[in-house]
Length: 202
Image 1 (cartoon, one colour):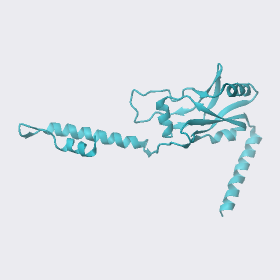
Image 2 (cartoon, rainbow, N blue to C red):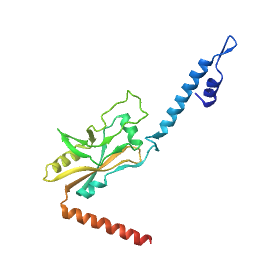
Image 3 (cartoon, one colour):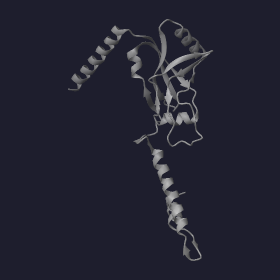
Image 4 (cartoon, helix red, strand yellow):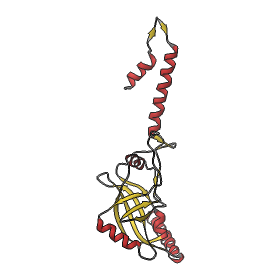
């Protein structure tokens, strides 16, 4: 319904026996207000204006490189529903607590939270923290299962992004837990990088 049609439909109700139908006018006006509120909510999520992400990074797990020594990375796809993809495109996802688990002969991404869109239909319902299957070739799955069997090894999501073809991908890091000394070295390295960046800018 166009804006012209909507305004005409609201402002000029039908006349009944040459008398103005006030009740019909009020009902139509209330309905028009609801439509406008829905359009407004479609562009505002939790009080913040969010743009639809078509390409590029959606979420990053900076904590992973601090807590783990990442030795190798691999790109994987994720099995998601249409409603989950839509939420991800609005940036309503966190991978900070994510990790990879083995279930039988497949790998699943656990601990990742995908929030429901506030404007979504009530019929649209999914578990925000459910385990989601990773899409990989069989040889990649077997290699990662082998890594998970090593002592102290873990696989965590580093980045979530849409590639150049608009496909959702996750960059997984194969790493080992750092001790306190390693973490202190990581902090020193970060501080040095920041200082170097300031000096170059100044």
